Length: 629
Image (cartoon, rainbow, N blue to C red; front, side, top):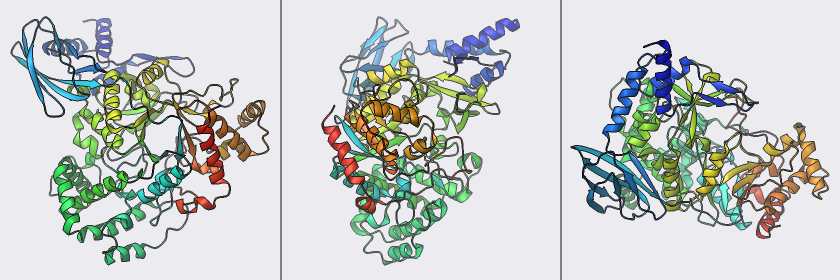
């Protein structure tokens, strides 16, 4: 085989696996994959090839033969009330059995190259096919065409939960519930936060909410011990809480806060008895997967490392530590379920990925790709691109396993959320892979089965009655937004990202969107107003729209009024903007050199009524939401 033939086979293999060999960056420059990057990505996908293309022809033949040997594709989608039609690769009469998600079963025969199933209830069903002496499982996704629509003209508040001051420093679910009740009293219907998923807060240590241990379990730091039924009866727990003392300063010490709270929670667990103990044991029986998570966390504590550092070691798990982690997950579920009891529910966040040494990459290790980091291509802000340290999911293996993992992740979120944000929604369509040891400028896009993933989202959104919001800030192809719109996902829109251009940002507010002034990755409005030269363009825009802008707070009121009167489906108000906070919660592109994810808000929930002008300002937002135009 000539070198040209080998390169051609490499390109053909890449095309068969959905690996894009080029893309256009934000400057309009066409970037082409290097042979080294292409080879690295294909090896990560499981193919024995080198950078020159040697081995690619054989790998392509094996891939095509494996696909041809299957009677059908591993996943089938039927939208709405249409019948699932599954093309068959065999003309031999096939026998099938369908296990319905609710426990029922159907069976029959098919021929003529297609299997047409009866109309099915919404959900994920398992089809077993037998043809030509071969058996195959097919996942059938019967999905509503659109995600849950949610209330009309919604609005709410955003503040990271860790930033709401609590007795141990970071906020907790009682504070979130109190904020939700306060918001509902003003007419709002949601309270948003950065992700609340489980985190490593000892060794290893990673407090970023966007590098969670798992997207299936919660961060026990957010449990409020005083809200547990055994609190009043446990003198020991109350003594330990009092000994921890009040938190000082505005920066969170996560290790100290978690260690102090853990001692209190362990005391509550030690004294668990009677009906509460029976309820906990029943929860363990009803959630058998929880034992695996709790054992994993106990093992990490013993090794003081994530799983990638102890994968070759064996040893017993600390039973007490495992029971603690199971107990705190139970408390998280109980307290999350109460957040929305007064009318405003949680707007929760689904991070793009997980910690590479966390539970999900251990439990579902075949789904995650080694030697690759998810990232972003070069743009105006990050000229060298970005590599985020997240292991990507393997597209073909996701399909082979029927999207079990992503469905479990979104179900976990929608079980408690009234709305859920899907971080980096373009990842449903394609993800930027950066091979280990290479700069992000060498990254390559890899396609994902987006139609199937939208079906998963729509099923779980309707099941949990949770509205979905796709984070689509930055450069997103029009096809992504059209697909989001077709399936009822709101997009995101931030005035600060749109300000400075020739167009009036308030003329372009999309109706199917969650809109606001900024995001947690942007400067606060005060910092924008005082430091960004684009504020002059924004001020001129507001004045042309009839607003007399005397100062920054006046400009903020005018902006919020314009957004609240718009046709946007939902408005999210950054609570910290309201009292002119200049410091950001996160500065992208930095880690330990900035206090990212550590800063407490200036005011706690119990102080909000005393913040000058806050409640009247939000009542104006509520009134504008009730009276469009």
